[in-house]
Image: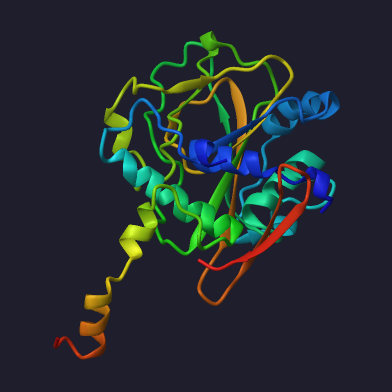
Length: 63
Length: 218
């Protein structure tokens, strides 16, 4: 399943083809309701909130 | 909806990665035989947002088409129960008809993100390469282009032309970039509205046959 969802096509540019994979992950999550599904952590890394930034947000921007 | 008619999880993954799903020989010959006369007579247009019942009353040709178990199961798997109709159109290409339609994402002048569209393409007869065959670019369905933004490009690597024997396939696509249509075909676009306050239920079959139902919020 993962292999199928990670299919690349010949017209994809080397880097921007990753955007297609990113959007596929989002579509798969929407269709299945599985909010944890990911491929190579593409969505995880974009939605990741490092602890240092989270703390800064909670304290109104001050660290 | 019977579980056996729903898409399998592998078919769903194929749709998500390629942007289309081909379903060969799912329409009975008797229905195909009526298609050309029905299309020639014309199918009334309907306002955007019409329900299936409003657009295609029970007993009508299109309703019989979309109520076929395999077709109904696929529609249910992708947009859930009670989708609305965005638009439909019968495409006819005459022999030596001249210029082909440029590449385009179909009907995506509406780029609001709170809906999910799925288009059914139905070919009632054999389509050969000489007839044109609908050109599509697999994997292009999630690229946010607007209408014919891609019309200037030609012969993209990996593009395909849909040809089929006289077994009459139906094809489901999700805004895949495409152009042209062979001889006679009908498209119907279904829409599921998915806002934060409206949930859409979709069902799929897992590969092992165990049903999975999820409530999705977009």
